[in-house]
Length: 457
Image (cartoon, rainbow, N blue to C red):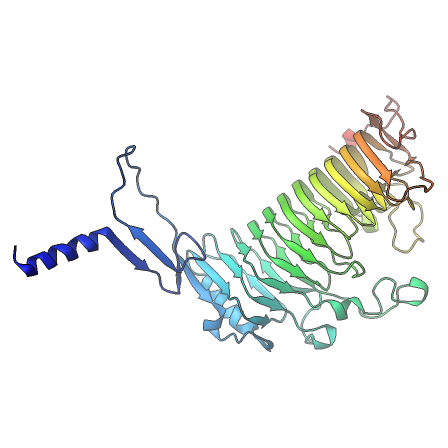
């Protein structure tokens, strides 16, 4: 065979062995972090009958740097983010990329839908931050929210970056709790922004992010359906006021998993209108615990049902698992399960408080949010002896009913201290297995007890 034919044959064989596709910087393949995708055309050993090839989505990537963002932590990059969003929102499969190695300062902004994108990804690998405190906030822009995602369906917010809320100057406003003389609250402007808010949106995923020092709530979901939050790290100082980690309101079909939260308020708070909520594997604290409420403020109606909190740790916190309602409200909290929760030096491990009041001057009311069908299973650990380990302070007019306790074992964190007995007021339920310490104040269910299941219907 002539030499040139040998060279042609070798080249043909080599080209058949591997075909390399180098994706451009504006396209993702099946992996969001791969920039090079190698496809081998070498036949595999004989196997089962081949299946039809599965098409993998190809994403158009909109890097905010390409839209004019500077990323120096000082320049206002809001407009660049808005332009990138507007473009990504019109593409079938898109990633809005906040790249690593940059810090982006954004003013209060609404990212609005609906979008044409199927599976829009808002990927944060760098740092994003708001203006530094109320004095740096533009006067003509609302101080109640920072980044808002409105009417979005099917978006994923993810990445290995950081959201820095820069909340320190907000926490020091005179109106904040305990900033006045002798722990009082002073008058003056008090609006503080929620860091990230999703409003009237559905099929959302928030995963893998770190967020710290929110001026107020770190995440808030209002009127949303289908929310999955996973693998977040949320941190703020224990004395930072109103810095709830995740708050949900009028939101359903929620999953909050595998996250670490420490802050100055509730790790997770569940407001009115929420149902079908599953919370699992949360490390919470220092904080104010995991709470349902507060509900029924200003005589409002509030309904919450089908809530599960499980396999979690609450440590060095003011409260553990709590239900709190204002007097004078209406509605119902029902079908709530707390299970497999470990407490470490928690002041109020188990608490129902139907006399919630911020001023301590709230007058007695005849109506109340009904509390029915609440179960506590395998709640163990230690408590701060300054408060009873279990407290069920139910409404004078409408008792708590169908409370169920089993395998509750709470021991004092400090040895040799006098331990307060569990407290009950107008609370009915069943102890399926004796608790530690024993709870004798829970009243047995009787036919004379008000049927709260009817009120919750």
